[in-house]
Amino acid sequence: MKKTGNGSKKNTPVRPGVRNTSQAASGKQLAVRSKETAPSRVEKSTSSKKSSASSSKKTSSKKKSGKKAPVFAIVMATVVVLAVAGGACYKFGLFEKRYDITNSDGTVVKLTQEELLAEMAVDVFPQGIIINGVDVSGMTKDQATQAVIANQPERPIEIDISLSLDGISYPLDLTSLPIESNVTEVVDNAFNYLRPTGQETAEQLIELHNAREALKTAPAEYQTAYTLNTDSISPLVHDVLDPMNCEPVEAEITGFDTETCTFQHTDSQIGYVVDIDTAVNDVKALLDAGTYTGSVEVNAEVTEPALTGEMIDNEFGLISESSSQTTANSNRNHNISITAEKINGLVLQDGESFSFNGFIGQRTAASGYLEAGVIVNGTTEQDFGGGVCQVSSMIYQSCIKADLQIDERHPHQWPSSYAEVGTDAAVDWGNQDYAFTNNSGYPIAMYAYWDPNTSYITVAIYGHMFEDGVYIDFQGEQISSSAAGTTYVANGSLPVGTRNQTRGAHNGVTARSYQIWYDAEGNEINRVQLDDTRYATINAIVEVGTLQPDGTQAAFDAATGTVTPTVTETTPPSDTAPSDVQPSDTAAPTDTTPAPTDTAPVETTAAPTTPPETTPAAAPEDTGAPQ
Image (cartoon, rainbow, N blue to C red):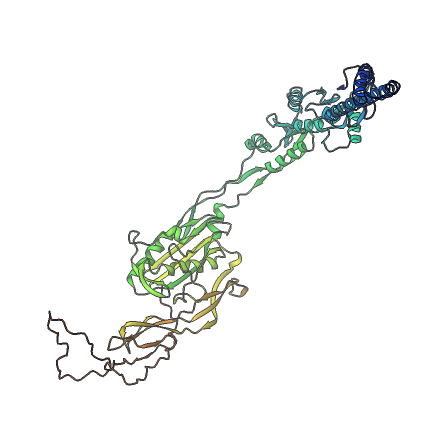
């Protein structure tokens, strides 16, 4: 225990208003010195002030003054001493309240609250803390942690687990599994036990002190816990059971013969399968429960492969097919043909995705594509790869009929002639893609071919056929439309009366499509409504000439396309008086009067004209030029 005081064995604190023995002695000595010197000072003072007084009065005055002066000096000296002592006490905290603190050996010391807190807040364990049998008294946390770890056994957990398969026991070596302990957590808890936080009252600190003192005779003991980390147990079980396990070998589809439309595949093999996953879980559950000795029964069974060669030969075939006739445009048909060749025979495994742009690539001259019609901003232009949208549309239709997952699809700006409304799929490099995922559970193959004799493009999907002859159809219907109008644009370079249509009109259409399921007899058994498709209303664009014969622009009404000729006003003769400025003598005046002409003046005021009929013609039928 920390001792405070004046250095004596027993600490005697100084309390306000009470003087100790040493102070009293000092006061007495001061008083004696005052008595010895006071008479001479008083006498000198008295004689100087009252020199004419009688001797009897002088004697009396000296006696009275001699009695008062020593008392006054003593009082003043005492005040000074007390003031100095009080200041020192205040400075060194001697006025702070001190408490009786009893130690475990029965000794009592007086400490302030701050001193008591400082004594218990040191960064070492108090006496009486034991962890795993290690006395950590007086150690820091790091020292205690190292001491406890050093005292741990090399393998605190002994494990004896075996695997039993068909009556034969196989030992399972789990010595590589890491054993973890909560040493750090236990050391932290023990270190913070009975440790003040700095927020306690004096009474609470005394209670903590008393509890800590009690540890010296009744130590607090802590025990760490050990756990087996079973995260890596699976490979250990596999090491034992894999040699006994003969897994089934599934037939693997290696290709698709586009001539016979059959799958090429490897052979399958029946397997003897040990239920290793269950064995792993059983061993893990045993260890997690703290049972480190025992035997785990392992189950095994004969397992047929999920996909056999026989299944591929008998259950795989045509799932869906879509076809449409192309145009007589040779460039367009060429683009369709080479695109079909690229995807013909493509095999997609279960879960694999297809992107038209990603697989076909950019349509350029270098990749073999020719220029043909494509839709750009509501009008048809020539660009490389025109016509490939007919291939992507046939793929889309076949995917719906095969019940595959559609990931991305965009309609054209207006319905196409080769597909029912709502069943087309537009593609545009860098902007629009068509993509789907094979979620059938089996591999699929794509067949695509453009027949030059019939000008038909066909896309079919082969795979595991639907059971019992079920098949799917894909149909679309128009459910609403909005008539297209005409947008008139003034063209100042065209003469009045001239009109030039730069874009055709296409009615807005909303279409609804259905995936319709049929049984083998052709009876509808299910109808699934798909997302509606909306084709934009595209107004015709007509340029209207506004250039008048005199080079000026006629008035133009953009709403109706009406052109109203304007009148050019002539400037009347000027009434301004001739200038008084005399012509210069250095040059003769120039004759600015025009020579007479026989040509009649031009008529500048146009007679009112009736504007041409501006009622827009009916929007053309949406035959939908192939894209």
